Length: 458
Ligand SMILES: Cc1ncc(COP(=O)(O)O)c(C=O)c1O
Image 1 (cartoon, rainbow, N blue to C red):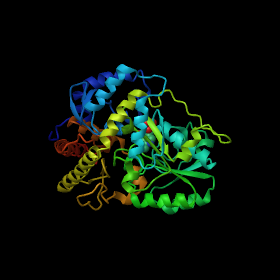
Image 2 (image 1 turned 180 degrees about the horizontal axis):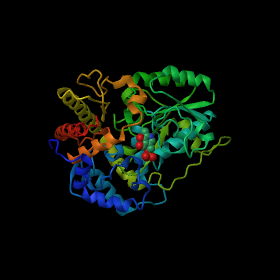
Image 3 (image 1 turned 180 degrees about the vertical axis):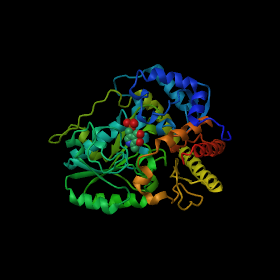
Image 4 (image 1 turned 30 degrees about the vertical axis):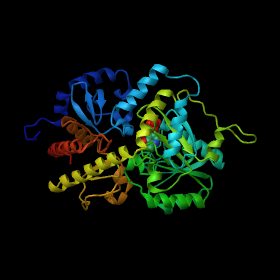
């Protein structure tokens, strides 16, 4: 849509177009705090309500077909509702959702994790990614005998108390509302990509037993992390006798079949996974060294970590996970999703340059971000999975600091009006994001940036 002086404001157009969603939100506000059921679904003036999804698309209650860049919060690298995963889950549904017993699918699921993920000598399934990082940190405390861990500013590891410090700006805050200071105090946070800061922190605090990170960068690559840093971190952890934990809840089975660790050839001691692991159903796991996961076993003279969990390795998630990981093992889904991500970044940058707009796209693998109000050097078209380009010198506060939410919501409304559900200033691709889908997305960006610019938001 061409924006003119007489075009109504975005919020007005969005409200007029998405009336079914608006009506539903009126009910939802009286049920849920904020009206939504996940913080990132908050949206001004109201979120979009979806009825069904397939491949790269989802459809809302008003009948709009939308290209989806949320991809199930990163779970759907195969696209929505892949036939093989749907069939596997439907068949399992008829056989039982919870036998309260061991079953064949959990073995096959665990073996697929072992086959694909280099660090996975042993695997323990959990109900979610949050539970997986909770387990990894507790296992690390048991194994090392040390209570503290080191983490990186802006890295997200779920919402349990231990990992809340420095997950969001302001990154120098050492307390989090609702989290006991004694718990928050077990976490030491340093900026990403700074090996000197890591070593200084490890030397300064002998109570640190483990280091945890998102190996492709916090909030799935807002400040990208690449191989040289991971190798340096592995060396530092080995040198100082610390456990290295890769949180591959997003990067696992996405950047490559074996995650970031396989792509970069750096093996952590423990790995946490979820999302693609369970093929879009709830589920997670903590995998890693057999001698560390051995703390889940009862052994004479050793403490045992208690680990129940009603939905651990539940058969529906196992069925979806097995069907998904079998396809991941072919390598095709990761390759195609990465190609879609690279094409989208390159085409967006070509658009921004041709229109001389102060925007830039960046990211690695199948993760794509756009930055408004950018006037620095323009990147050259990328040919690989990691582009070598990072705006603002990788500064965490510039790239992952507080956002202008007025602009974020306006861009989201504009993209929705142009047939795309784009996740704030970022999005992830699946193997269903074909070149045609990517091309339509670039056209939607062109119209949307025109709109937000016309409203004086950039
Ligand atoms: C890197 C990372 N770790 C952990 C989690 C938490 O996983 P879950 O939402 O399954 O609890 C997430 C969720 O987005 C994540 O991105």
